[in-house]
Length: 290
Image 1: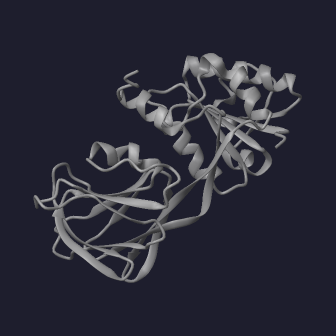
Image 2: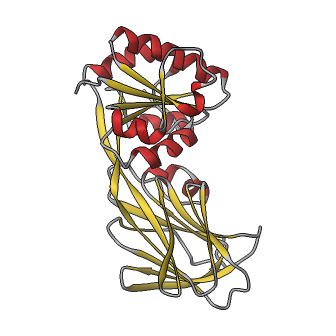
């Protein structure tokens, strides 16, 4: 695939990110690519590159390169998933589960990508809808997870969980994490949830500090519609957050529906990408014995 127009997106006010973007600009100019620099960082980069919003990059570019950490990738991905654009990340963050190009090896790995020597995958995303009095109130999308949680620290709530039309349980807890395979190594993992390989068409439902020793994470078909009914007995409002970014207030008696969004995030990786190698590296798993 020929990438004629490339969008560059970066972590704000971050010296190493700016250095990587300058390297990318130099590489892309050699390839005679049209370059679009995200407008939020354009003012801090000294160059003669056209600036563009995330939506403009999504609609005009063939490839978006996100320089930063997983949080930067998530923020960009929620917008870019609406468009037919490939996305790749240069890791200038901490763990870097989603940004897998080594900043010390940008040119070689980018050469592979431009030569179409890539590992391609589509990551599905979620949509969370909040209904008040039976009417849709708000909706947001999530790459990693949708989380039902209390607006106050260490406060329990009561809710019911349905998978499709099937009642699963009522629960008193701090909330529930509904995670995609992409998000299974994020908040869900810290809450004791399982790691799901990216191509698995499944969701993990992870209770947060449930008031029951028998409550455990559940893995369900990703094509299921998840419904959370918030008990009218709750004395306070609770919240739904998407990727810890977009937050929606949920009142007692409201209900929330979580399902696959119609869009996908189209990710490309260098040809030597291996998910289990990523896990071993990021989570400090043991290497081969011999």
